[in-house]
Structure formats: structure tokens, C-alpha cells
Image (cartoon, rainbow, N blue to C red; front, side):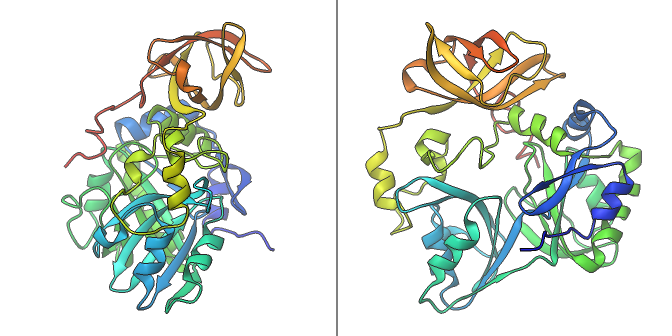
Length: 366
């Protein structure tokens, strides 16, 4: 299969991006700016990145709700037009195979946006035999504009007011005279928006946001900057913090599982596994002056009790932090552990997550 190419590829390289492949598309692994400066831009002002590598699937037809409700652990009948919801995507054994945001765009029309797992296969599986069509849309591009100043930046040129758009809500509007959909979502832990725009207009809209954002300190954000943000905010990254070895119970995702809805893929197995968690997701603060190793072992008394999934050094916090999977018996806040990796051996302490904005007041700010 040919590699997917973002309409913004040349523009990102022009800005100095060092590209690497993720989800069948080249994406900026680094920019010339420091990833800590990128993190600060998003936390204190505004940053922007291209999330077009996510795969977008339209589900349309009389049975569209039935399709996405079978796919999702959330009760999709409660997600009305203009609203969206995050959901784990499960296999029949109750374990992760992906995660997704599902947007209710119009009556009998949903958009499923997912990352590097089996989302396409599972959507098509859920649609089999139902009166619904599934269409992969690589023309639709997504620009993630994140940070406390994002509302002022986008609101200044939007045809409609976005200031009152609540978290996990979206609307069609115009920005710089271009038809877009703006969604109050993102992968930063900050107030932010995702601008959905077709490929033909993606570069123009990106450039307009970029130039208008410069006086606010806008920076283009790389995967390196995103890594710091997602660890600080304890946002799950499928493939690291959740894999086919894990259930939502083990990945701090119980909040995203409806106990009252009808059947969904993996439901029976998932509830049979509740209370049988082999690991739980927790945070650590390591006594180290950089990020610890991905895959480093978490140890207590010389025995392995867990593994580091997503590490980062946060200059703003002055701490080496990480999201880990740890055996439940050793995951209590304050537990002293040792971290042993290929390049790092240090002591650490189990701490609560998220590391920043634990009450999510910044995320939900109005």
C-alpha cells in the first residue's frame, strides 16, 4: 500500500521538520525548536500541529448509530449531533485494539477518527450486514490548534463564535472564508481545537493560522513536543499506554465504559475481566535529569513489578516523569520503586496522574 501523504508535507519540511513515519504517513518528529519550548507554547499560549495522519472514517446510513454503538464502549445514543466522544476500541476478548474519537456530524452520519490500531477493520466488521456505508476519507485534514490562546486566535477569524463551544462539541463554520469544521478536542490537556479542512485548502488555512498566531507566540509542534504534553496530562497513547495485552480497566479508562448500554464488541469478556487486572496505569517521578528509557523495568525489592510506557522530562515541572503499567500491589501513591533500563538506573516514586491540571480545569475552561 502506498504511503499516505499530508497536503502539508512540503510546508512542514519548509519549516525545518525532521520527518518520520507514523500510521502510514510522514509526520514531524522534530522541528528546529526545542521540544520543551514547544510544550511551553501550548501550555502558556498556543501551538499547532498536523494530525492528518489519523485515519478518518465516515459512517453513513440508517444503521450508522448501530455501527458506532457496537464499535464503542460508550453509549453512542447519548452523543447527539454536534457532540463527540472518546472510546476504547476492543477485540472480542475485551482487550484494546485501538482507540478513537467518534463525532456525530448529522443525522445518520458519524465520523470515526482513530490512530495506529485496527480501527478500520473493526468499523467495517461492525458495519457488516447493516444498512450503513463506511468510507475512508484521506482528503479530510485536521489541524490541531491547542493552548489557552487558541480560542482568541481562531475566534478572531471564524464566521461563528467558538468561545462557547464546550469540550467535545463541534460545529461547521468558516475560517478565513474557508468551510471548515471546528471541534473542541485535542491531545494536549489544554483548551484547544481541531480544524477539519479539505486537502485543497489545508495549506492556506495552516498558513493563515500560523501567521496570525505568531504575535501570540505560536510554534509548530513536533512529536517531541506532543510527547511532553501527553505524558504531563496522562493522555493515553495507543501502542504504548494501551496495547492488545490490556483492558480498559488496566489503562485508567473505566470512565469510558458504559455499564448500562446494550451489547458492544468485547462486552461480555470485558466485564468478566473486571477485578482481575494484572497491571494498573500509574505515574512515577524518577530521580533522573532526563527522560528514562521506554520499556525500562519498574522494580521493587529486586523483582520486576511493571514497565515504563511513556517517559518524558518536563523542564517546567523540573521532573523526570513517566506513565507506567505496574502490578496493583505496588501501584499505591508513595510507593518507592527502582527504574532499570538500557541507559538509566535510578530510584523513583509512584505519584498520582495527571501530572498537570489534575482537575482538568484548563481543559474544560469556558
